[in-house]
Amino acid sequence: MGDCKDETVKICEEPQLGVEGEPLEADECEKAAALPVIIPGVQVSNIEEVVKADPDCYELNLNHNRIEKLEKFELLTRVERLYLRWNLIKKIENLCVLTSLVELELYDNQITRLENLDSLVNLQILDVSFNRLTKIENLQNLLKLEKLYLVANRITKIENINMLTNLTMLELGDNKIRKVENIDSLVNLRQLFLGRNKISKIENLDNLINLELLSLQANRITKIENMENLTKLTELYLFENGIERVENLDNNVQLETLDLAKNRLKSIDNINNLVRLEELWLNNNSIDNWKNVEVLKENKTLKTVYLEHNPVAYEAMYRLKLKDIAPWLEKIDATLCR
Image 1 (cartoon, rainbow, N blue to C red):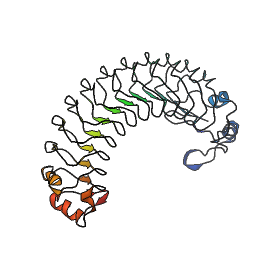
Image 2 (tube, rainbow, N blue to C red):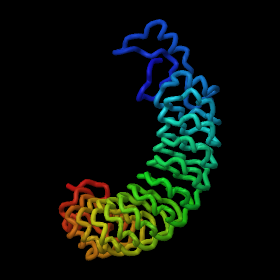
Image 3 (cartoon, rainbow, N blue to C red):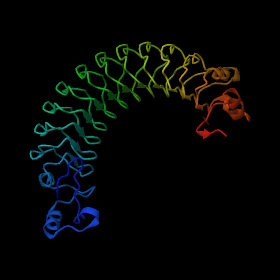
Image 4 (cartoon, one colour):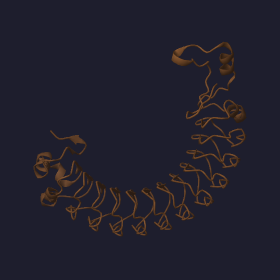
């Protein structure tokens, strides 16, 4: 099939065309026709045959093939990216020979435990989202890891990742985590996603001085606090919590996006120092007085404001009033201003 450097292995039913659409020579055609066929949704009977198709490939895509067991990857001496999304894998195993891997995707399988990853010391990206994990464990050898995705599992505690100091992204959304903890050493973290958990307090973020994005959507937070050291923060997502007041953002002057939709706000306070703010989402709150909206006059960098589903938004002249307060707005409630 030829060298597949820098390309995902492509295995198809019909012989491939050569350069500029020219048909392959007879011997090449026979080789192409002999390759195993991968059809989404159909059981792959022999992974070994798939691997033999091109053992020198850098990327191998085995997504959506109803694979039940990881095995027979011994021939993959050079693979760097292995994609196994949407399969039926129950256990991480038999990957110890894949020491060249830099990216491993096991998204949407049936995995119950993080294990048998010790030899993958070059791994930079690991995605085990949408599985059945209950604990973060056995990652101590993955010191080069930069991005870790564990979305939509059953994890109850942030733990056993303090050694992963090269992490720039940590995605733990949609789990059962109750507390932000044990991440003090992750000083290189740029993005932290903890939405859809059971967190009641913003805390233990003091050492994350390089954090640029923090997402705590759909939790149980009632107060904005403990973010004084996050001076590089440009995006803050606190959608769907129980916050009653905008406060304690004095040091977060780099903020460009602030999402406080679906909270319990009655007024807009303490944002005049956010001189770079471009996106402000306040829909689905209880703001009922235009005097509380007039504070937006101070935020001359604002481009987008969401105020729909607040009492003030039900007034007939709502859009005109808001545009009069902040004539520089480009969009109100997802609709471009004229």
